[in-house]
Structures are given as C-alpha cells and as structure tokens.
Image (tube, rainbow, N blue to C red; front, side, top):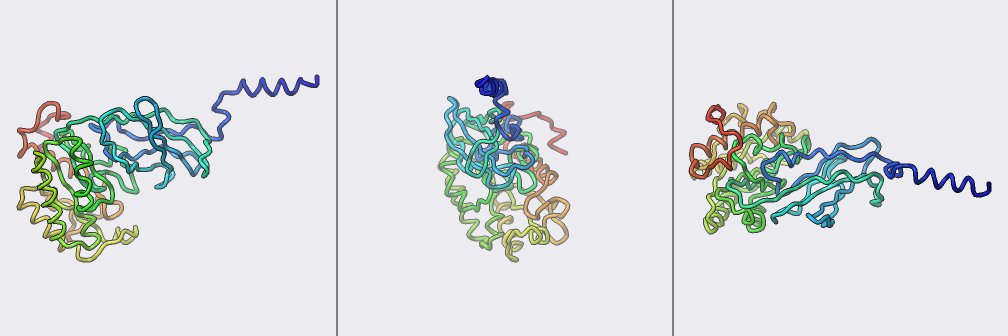
Length: 324
C-alpha cells in the first residue's frame, strides 16, 4: 500500500493528453496567405487571441523544419509584423503559441502555416502601409486589407508599413530585384508629406526609383498619393503637418504628367481630404477605398500595359468588371 498512491499518480499523469499540461488552448491562426496570389514580402502573422492571455511567441521555420527566427507579439494581443523580408524563393512556415513574459510555453503550437515565395513575377507593388495592407483595424495578413486583392492582375506585395520614399530607395535592390518584375507600381509619399517633406524631395526620390527601374529593365508606374483626413488623424493621435495638401498636389501633378495612375477625386471630400466614411483612422482607406484603388489600377493596366498580360497573370478575366 505504501507505493499505491505513487503508482496511481504516475498512471494518471501518463494517461492525460499532453495538451492538458498546458494552461491554455492552442491559438488559431487567422492569416490568409494561402488565399493571396503571392505571400507578402513582410507578412503580418495574426491569430485569434485567447481569454486571459497577453504574450504569444511566433516561430518562423524553413522547409526542413529548422526555426530561423522567433518573434513576440509587440503590436497587439493578436498580431505581429515580420520586418525581415522573405526575398528568397522557397517554402517557409510560421506557428504561434501562448507564453508568459519569460517565454515559457503555455499552450501547444498551432499547425504550421505556409508562406510560399516564388519568382519571377510580372507585376509588383512597392509602397508603404497603404500597399502593405492593414492598419489598427485589420491585420495585414488578411486579404480584405490589401488593395491588391481587388485588382484582377496578380501583384506581388512589396509594401512595408511606415516607409517614406527614401526608405523605398534604400531597399530597392534587396526587396524588388529578387522578384524581377516587368512592371513596378510605386505608391509612396504619404508618410513624407505627413511628416513635412517638400514635394521636390519626394520627386527626387521618385526619379532615383525610375533610374533604378530603367537600369534593371523594369517599367515604373507611379500611383497618386491618397488624401488624409485631419480630424480623424487628430482623434487617433496620428501626427501630420498642415502643408500636406499643397505638397500632395504638386507631387500628384508630377505623377500624372509622367503617365501615372490617377485615382481622381473619388476618395476626397469637398475639402480635398480623405472621406470620413472611407477611413477608420484618417490615414488608411477602408475596404471600399482599397477596392477602388485596386480596380482603378486594374483598369489602368488593362488600358496601358495589356502587352504584359497573359493568362498566368489574370485571376478571373472579365471586361465587364474592368469597366465597372
């Protein structure tokens, strides 16, 4: 009898599933990379947060299962952006578990989620958060937050949130050239003018990007800078300078003079600001705004660069949709 309780305790321990040793259930990933034409260069990992949890650990693995980096959720309870670009062809994976602040594991790992990197591509988009996708309201790993989703052509997302045009120049060789695009859509400048940059400085960076494209047989297509909504940005604590409208007008004039994409005034209100009903934070267009951006770019590509387009680049070809 003296060993009876010890033996019973051991038997009970080994009869309980491994999951029961952890305090929390397994997190459920919510990214939609598998539904995108291409995985983003800078993916945002997201999951459904669990009650009474605060810390999550993300592991990125290569194709043989080796962990190549780990990240903690620094942005919110339900997501984190990977600032190391996936610019090498191959299959990668990510997974998430609950941990404490000392990284002690408190749940099972989620099932590994695929990040497939392919090259070359026909179309790519270089930009900031408006290209990258997402904001505080939607994680960038979901298709509804990216304007590329609403363009009929398959576009590699090379956006990076927070970028200025100088940052885009700096990362061109590292982030653009591995994918060898035939045509590069460039949508940058809103962070420049928001922070007080002069139009002339932004245009100088555009010229550098155009030269870099020419040296690598890439056609650059500049896209108009979207407007901002000052009241909503103030309410959200997003800084800006009052001269942004004047600088934006100068830059957009240059873009249109150089054959760029014109978004027209459908995003603007009577004051030349981003329509309040098209943005949750004053800076980022919402679902409808991104849909309009995507369809405008789609129409532009169809009308001006049809010679680049084959069946492989088209999602579901429809002249009716392009003209709508």
